[in-house]
Image (cartoon, rainbow, N blue to C red; front, top):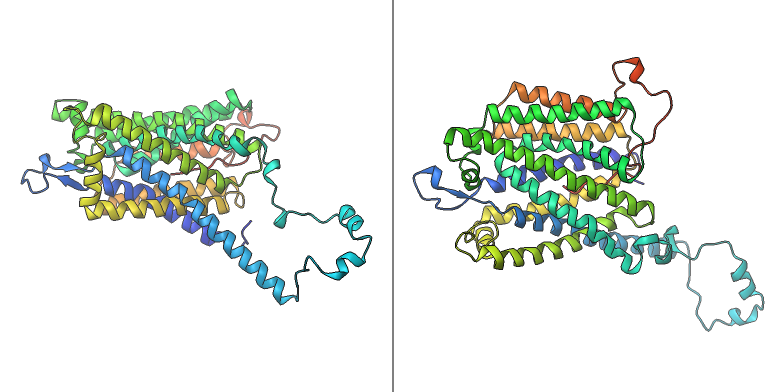
Length: 421
């Protein structure tokens, strides 16, 4: 657990990297990769590779192994340095004193000192996630693939702030799945809060449909949903919001699976992220190859999101896209590291406040960059999302006395789910 002096820094870095994840991905989506010299902006083709963006997210998660390796080397260096400074000298195997004491073996058997350094559990005590059981982490990784890819597609169709606000629907599915699969209990005020969250997401989506942002136009995916230019923008936003909200089903399933596995093992959460990064990257690359040969090489799929060769060319030839990809990987790795460093050191109130600030900062930066326009209806939807989420988590008391629980209630996911993006 980090010291109290480090927590503000870790929280700040968690907030910074969380904001950068969404903004850098949206910035990458806005880059022109084909027909950029055409005087007609409507013919410009932008970077639309949601599957490739999912792969780069898993590279960032797999980078947690590098962080763990560096931390392990540092801890070994510190332990050796402290041992030498205290005058410790290792005992040689042929030391005469070892044979001169006939009670040495008996003393070692009855010793109460642990044989495991730093109190870390051995691989045999890691529950279901030991040995080949580690492959079980491929299940939440697959959920992560489906959820992240759908959200990346949705981000192509909506503004960054609407994307971030719509992700607030996660609490709905986490609540439902926790009741069904983890046998948690929801009080009446929590059920009503979930209804309020749904209404808040609907209002946010309605704001984007009524006042679509001009800068969000021009994606080739827009032509798939409507041929009338006037109706295409509204339909595009509604479809984008539906994809992002629907993706929360897979994200909630991932959280519930992680909670189930972590309750039955003693594995470090950052190690969970590392394993899921490796499994997710492997499955994503295999899926990309299959989709490339099945769809990407056809006449209809060539130059599309399933054309791996075209996606690689767009990333390598465009230096802005390439640099942003590396920054996204670093940002995602940092977000997981800083988030997991403080997630058990701060209260639920602090976690909800951090997430709210993250959405606000994304909204402010997007407005400042001119990526979207200000919408009062979106303010209403965001306020509803924040209020009902706070009520659901018990941060804000329900407005009516009969809704307030008389006894204490447990958190739905006490171990705090691992958020990857």
